[in-house]
Length: 343
Picture (spheres, rainbow, N blue to C red):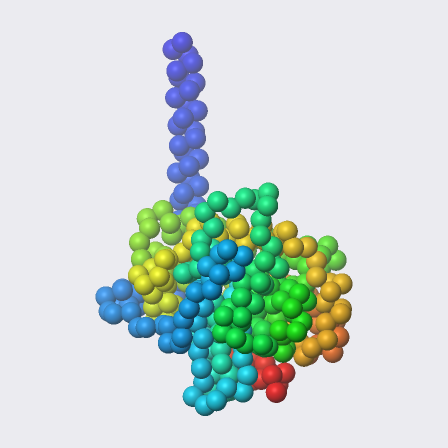
């Protein structure tokens, strides 16, 4: 009996040592945040958070799920409507404010909405991994927003998973789509002929989440978002607007519902359940633009290039020094290219 206790105690010490070692490894890993990050975050935390919602907001029901949306009008009468669809586990506030401003400055009404499971839309509490909702289901959320605003047709812009949803919307509801812009996305993330989605990036994002969640605080949540942006930037060398990102994160924490820890897995299940869109993309007949960063570390640019080759008459923009994000410095280039297919 004494021997068994000694063995169990030794095993316990080994397990504890492994846990401590793993914790130290994770804590010391991850990207180095920019200089003065702490001071900037602390300054933002200490001051009032600017209002980020400036348009008309509402709630619409889609497949029994409540979806929050915002409609932002240009100064003059709108030339048309743009529907923005954000990426995995991100809500409507994931869109850079300068990007939205660039589109309204071009004269367009811009609509953004929170995916199911994010922001002020319903969070799915009893999610069944064996019966997940699909990207087509998520596309119907966007159509429900258009219905609520009595908009017959819109120009659809989606990033990453949002690009996949935008593709489904164009396929499933062709009469509702004026044009399609798919940014840093894929027509089939499981295409074995293309470089795969980066598992290293996914692991780095998980490690960052663990690192900054050990001691949860507003400051650490901001740091997690900054670290994630750096990871997704890859080898691109863009500056982060720490103050803007901090304000965005704090707004979500203080004035909305914060961040849903379960939604990433739910959205991944939706992507997995949806399969390839290749055959249907070949049948599209509408102005289409494919944009992809040459330095994208997560969804390799080959995925964007294959989409551009599949979709009839698709235009493309391959952006140097751009990772898996939309940096402020490149917004004029991207929005001006989008404007070409909106006219």
